[in-house]
Amino acid sequence: MNGKGRSPLPHISRASAGRAVRAASARHLPRAEGSAGSARGQGFMSAGGRTGKEGREQGAVLESSRRAMVEKLQEMGVQDAAVLRAMGSVPRHRFVEGALHPQAYADISLPIGAQQTISRPYTVARMIAALRAGREGKKLGKVLEVGTGCGYQAAVLSQVSVEVYSVERIQSLHELARTNLRALRIANLRLQYGDGTQGLPDVAPFDAIIIAAAGLAVPKSLLLQLETGGRLVAPVGSTQQMLQLTERLGADEWRTVTLENCHFVPLRQGVA
Image (cartoon, rainbow, N blue to C red; front, side, top):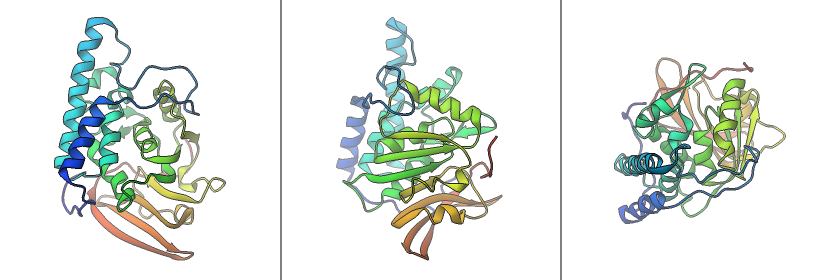
């Protein structure tokens, strides 16, 4: 995703955002039980299973890198304090292979298998902040994520939402996300294997929907699963893609604004 055409993010003072960065680097996310797994896991800040001096040293490096990532996000225009806290709390390195840990907090996408990638940190923060614009101090309600991938964005969403449902069409990635999230035991996160373009009609309506792949248009089935006043953020296009934010105004009325240029993998139907 490039930086052209950015629309302003909701403003929070630099003092508030700075406090969020410092708080995020010091806190652990809750070890709660959820569908992502029931095994009793370690805190979010561990260094990926290593123990002793080596583990402590690696953990310190990763924590410093995560703190620097959050500070960079703030410089790039993300001012939502809750989003910054969430980005600073979720350990991105746990969602990529060990060989990629040194790059885990760089603002780049990284491979996760099945020809898919974990989105760059700015993209994750930007999309979630767009859903939350004007709602500072309040969590998102029930949220649908289309495209779980490795589970990282779902983990971030869980920190700023009451309830998150995430659907993945590729079975190997669904299982990868379950593995990545199991030890974190996030109580308000539910993972589903299936065709995300169909949404989850039995669970709808949703306060917010986030789509992690680009279609030529947003599926109507997903627009219809938004509650009135709800928002959907998604990349749209093929070669030229734009990040769009859509709000449902009524039974048959939606308003869409374009946020900025972006680049995502294609949105596909069915399961694999």
